[in-house]
Image (tube, rainbow, N blue to C red; front, side, top):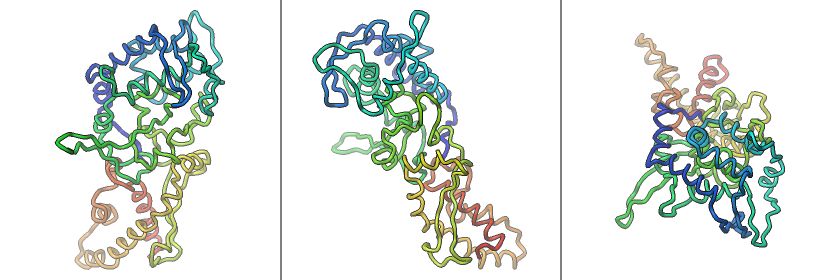
Length: 371
């Protein structure tokens, strides 16, 4: 659990958009479907339907507007606030000078609950979600069709430089290019769509919506396609967007059952959401954070043993020699091999857990709560 920070966001975004004219090709693909003939599509892999973009429909207006340069950049690289603006516009039916607001609330509800009245008799339909899933998800995000623009997921993850899952902060994520049978293969972590592409297919390619994470956090029964927003299109979140994660809003705590816990069974771990019950429920519905971190009492006890050993031996030795040592700031580097600074969070599993628990232990040793 940490906030994703880009050292040079403008350079990273421009590289994402400009590599092999990616943004230009996505825009051209969107404009192609404004007049493309009807095509067969399997709705959620089962029901076959005929899709066709109808003139002046919300689908047509979306593709027409967001295939243009400035709006296309917002669509592909807008931050979370921009994404919410786009969702609101879609929710309102893409109104413009010639078209009034169209009620899309029912449309979103049917997507979320997988209930849709789409004819299967071969007639052409303009279904906003299915058409945009075909373009953004099937062709570009998941697609490998020759001649069709697609996203290089390996390069996307590698460019971010993350090594630890930003959702749970517990497990490594890696990108490597090993060789097998004299052929290069790519190994990449999962990429989660924070706002799920099943509900918001038009955000399937958005830079800030694609979150590299561990398999455990991205697959069922964890987040997968669960929507982190309680209501649409209101920005009421039940988990924090990783680019906006607030380190102080959630903290880890340990609770010793005695002044000198003999083993890990005498230490329990809890997660403090500081009174935010929506976040508490959200992080446990989507990531099971409380139960997962309850299993890390062993790491907390290991840290306790290290500090106690230092205080009972090394500290006394330094003091007897009259050497002044700011050991509380020194110990993390000795015990964990790194300092507890924010730049280490994307690189070190359990960084936030270690930082929070260490801070509490320091205070507890100083006040005599543990010894």
